[in-house]
Length: 336
Image (cartoon, rainbow, N blue to C red; front, side):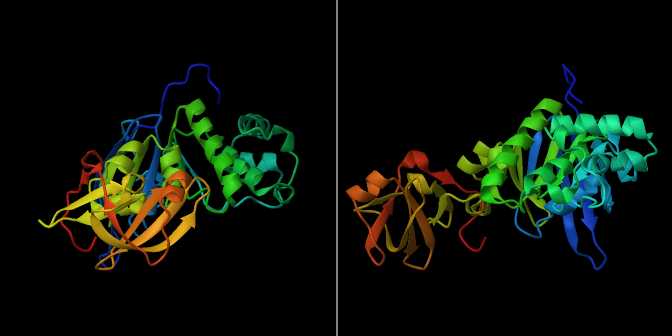
């Protein structure tokens, strides 16, 4: 599982994939998506956007209504999950409480008829990868939450998949542990040189982990690109608002622009607004503001900037920005 020179695997292509459920609801709508081998991809978006259905289509737990899916240039629609070259790591670890860590990791190999000595050898290797080989004889109840997650990861990797599928894998962890496990996932992906496809509703996770962020809305891709591209160059108001850290301003001609919160200035002249609240963030302050028609804005200030020009709730201020910080948006002003 640790080849000295690993060839990247897990090139994925969705070609006009649609998933329509009984009753006519469309969960995924003519999806075209290419993922290069050895990528860390985050499918991001609000509940109901189609990201989990997309993952399940790739895993083989759902079949598309139309379209095709390829993995390393091989069509996989119609193949059972165990023959696709993918492995799924679910949000709930679903470890067997009565089995040892070693037997939990080896379980999928047992179901494939692999002999005991061979499956235990492969399970031990997977546990070494996640640095839990000394815990092989323990039961799941004797492990911490983070250790249980690494067991689940080892169980998914033991079949040597070309692609690992992760369904909100960090949502059950506390913030401190979430950061540690996030770093481990990225390290494992780089070492193994396989694609990780990770479903999340957390912008922070996507920004920290992904080589490619795919932001979905109503079964379609709203925007895809590197984390920097989505955050710094949103194409629509939906992207700017969902990724966070931006203000969306309507223009007189009906267009819209986005300006990052840390590039929006509170000054003497500009767009009128009222301070709603001031919140300490640990690295500075977030100032919440309301426009004259109730629009919600936010300005990120350093401690030095706030102390130099204090603001407080109820205060009337003006918002301004530099021309270089404007990001024109493709959609017109109105509901997003």
